Amino acid sequence: MKRFVDEELNNWKNEKLRRPLLLRGARQVGKTFSVRKFGKKFESFVEINLEIRPDIKIIFEKDFDIQRILRNLSLISGKQIFPGKTLLFIDEIQASPAAITSLRYFYENLPDLHVIAAGSLLDFAIENIGIPVGRVESLYMYPMSFIEFLLAMGHDLLVQEILKYQLGEQISQAVHNKILSILGEYLAIGGMPGVVECWRDTKNPARCFSLQNSLIDTYRQDFSKYAKKFQIKYVDTIFNNIPAQIGKKFKYSVIDGDYRKRELAPALDLLITAGIAHKIISSHGQGLPLGAHVNFDAYKIIFLDVALCQVILGLDLEKWFLNPEQQFVNRGELLESFIGQEILAYSNFHTKKSLYYWQKNSQSSTAEVDYLVQVGEKIIPVEVKSGAGSTLKSLHMFLRDHTQSPYGIRFSTQNYSKFENIESWPLYAVAAALKFNKQI
Image (tube, rainbow, N blue to C red; front, side, top):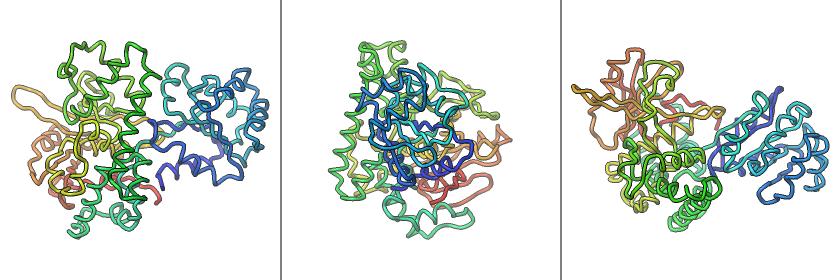
């Protein structure tokens, strides 16, 4: 299946001043699959998994003699490693802090060798030991975006239409309805590559839903790998409560049970580090960067994947296939989460993306804009609407108070349109609205 990160990997391959590459992201978002596919572009591909083969860790722990390390990795894999011809892939590298540190010496002593490392819980290791500044680069991966989902389903022409479409005229209503119907499929299947592949190959919802439950079990089994024993129950509690609070300011006080914030807040931080959850932080939106003027105590949370979020809630995903129009109306909080997931998917692959929203609470007025995004050098407010309602009071208020923002965006089930300084885009057109420009 095609991923937009493929283009980034190709660009990295051809760079003259190339550094070892870390692929970062939650478990099962497709990191290993993408590297294996990319490895076919080389004369040889050597994959080392430090979780499956913990005995290999000793190779990195003795010293950082790169020639010795390569010689031993060649003997272990049974393949010669040639700079410029071989892609060396070190998977689950978080299992060996020394292996992470060795990336610096690959860069300094053997820059012609293509080295990629990945790990499902890599960010925890990086928090503890750091990464060599200026000697390693990162690419961040998320679940498959809706555009990638369309490509996986063979809808290349629809992708081309969405990415090139302008606001000057409406798209054919029949085409619009077709894409919304496919979006309903995506909201049920989600963007986890294994589930998407199952849907593509079988069109069997029951098998896909079973895979989703297995993924959720896998995430729960991981708790013991990064949480202390006494924290596991708090991590599990937050894990189960995030889906119930999407679309709202996250509050520990509404969680059932005798819990304290000082117990639950670290558990949330662990899930965020694992890539399972993402904060949407309140920002004043008065200038760039958006993170310069924020209220860290006010935030919303979205789950890694909108379909997995619904599974945890126990929702009937088949309704997205049977009556997507009604689901679009009833599940406004899920659509808001979907848009956040899309914003992450189309962000700069080389930096860890932060999400922001805007709220105003005063005696005279209360307002909230779902997201603030940077398009070029401008801050653009984004509202997500689940029904046909056209009231955009908060969006207008933001634009009135933030004259440096030239326009606002509304995402909804409605067709393309523009009125004054409000651009209305269909829910499926986030990539085009954010000026995402990648080769397909």
